[in-house]
Length: 240
Image (cartoon, helix red, strand yellow):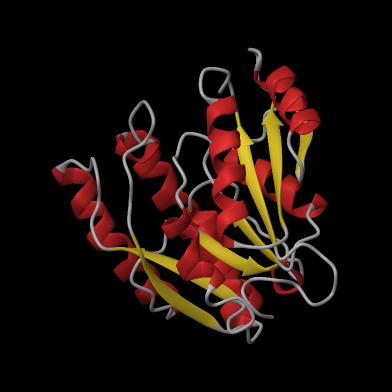
């Protein structure tokens, strides 16, 4: 693969964008993402997953799919960001998969480190040089979490919970038990266990277009820890 171009005729990259009640920013987000991908990788598709939105998100997504090349839409009942990503992954045709939040701006430099590793690694893990908008509790959590993942699973990556790119054929070989934030750790553990190669790349974290990260809420932190422990128990039983 050269320059992010697939040699098989399939899209080089499928970007899945979960969208739940994002009518305020979805159009600008997808148009910006489409323009960005066109500058970085030849042959990229965008799959917008309308995750049970109650506002005009679904209609806006349908309109974008009709107006922009390489944009598709999937509508479903609300299943959370993990369920939305898995639904989009099941529809994707790209050699690599990425999840891109609807409220995160996109620039060519955000994708270039991943594309440079296409064909060289099965999972490409983005490592943030700094955390934008994190309060002290979130910074502490960000320091502890990868160390906890390392302790429980022997997976040593510097940043577990940011943007990953997965070789689609490798990613689709296993079933994920988690649907929330721990899904990201589970995907990397399962890829490691099946012999997939993992590369880390330096990336920049940008401010969200609006709102605050859900990870800032103590309830989300607790659910993330509970989900990670739940997966650890499942993983231990599987290994026995």
